[in-house]
Length: 272
Image 1: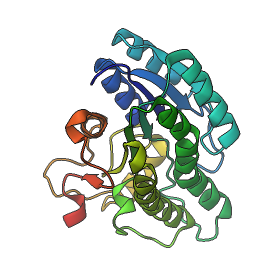
Image 2: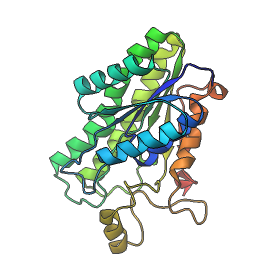
Image 3: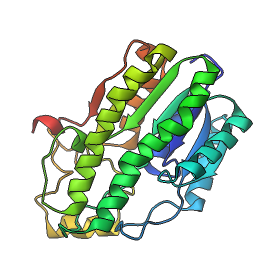
């Protein structure tokens, strides 16, 4: 990657977001790291904390890159824009965007839970649109082109595991919606040499999945859930690093002719 490079990563305090931040930092990319750093009442597992974000800062700096942490909820466009703009002031114009922030509500069976439906869609879909809206003006000003990577899910390509709950309907619908955003944005920003692609991981071994709520759910339902079932043997979950490898590829010049693509990172989940 030719310098200068600045990346915005949402959901950067832990899990996939932290992995993407450190991976890009190791390539010499400076990071604007965005995270809510607070729980959402309707989501049944703890979200990242300010301490988690501080650890991401430490790891990125240890990798030799600069980092500007931003505490902002991707559902709030005004706060997100202000935070991103502060990062641009500190580090320079944006070249790479990884819209990674997301939540899930597996194991919440209520088919009429409007609050969880709203919170999931607002985070996973509106939050991705907000991230695009907050970052693209800088990418256009920089006039260097760039790469936008929208982290969806295999639930953005298939419907397996639908159980009629508001939580799973919201997750599948929001992650499918990310594909529509990706394709529309790929058309919108191609004249600026900004590429837009989406990534579709199967279940990833991060705190979104590896938590007490999910452990209890898997114990009660050992046959699996909407997120389980991979074709490759002995891969119940992939690693965050597996997704990061694809982020690094799509952000690099090696992918300079790739845009508008929905790329699975799924250990064969889609063909089960």
